[in-house]
Length: 121
Image 1: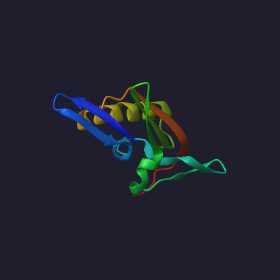
Image 2: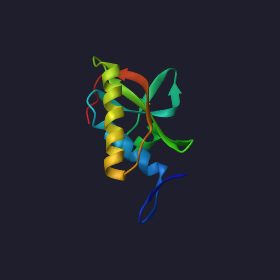
Image 3: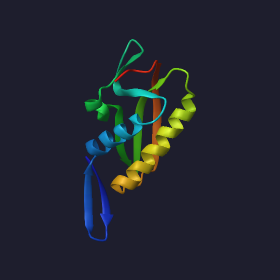
């Protein structure tokens, strides 16, 4: 599956995997975010933190009614305001995708899968 962008010079097709990886990398730069979580796998109510090379597994890119929707599954740092972290991730991902890929994102949905202490790199 891919997202198509039409320009005056022609069409650009960007695979959703590329968009998901980019969105995950941008989200990881946000303060208060410990990591991304898989959108499908949750064992005993505990979300696994994904490694850098698997960031796209914590992001889902969809086209609904000619609109681009991005779902991010995140784990936030203990002691931070979840709403502030989520809002920051939404704004940053939307801005970065517009500036870097020229992709207009209509929705960025955040699903907080857990709260953890900061992870060391």
